[in-house]
Length: 107
Image (cartoon, rainbow, N blue to C red):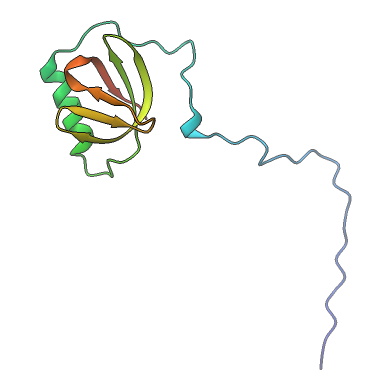
């Protein structure tokens, strides 16, 4: 009662198939030159409110992509956590919240 399976016809593929060769990696995202960072400074209350929104949202608050401008540097990083008055980043950096001039959560 063992039936033989039908033969499969292998037709030649004439078009280019490269579905998986281009992949977007969100962690390696670098801002393009067309993206601009606001030059206006936020008040400390606005900065604390934005940070609280990130860490008190209903979503998981680990690996949150953010853009932070301090008085010395611009960070395009992911947040790990908040300890006292500092933000911890994926690059093992500590950013003092009092030094932050601009804070934006990236999507």
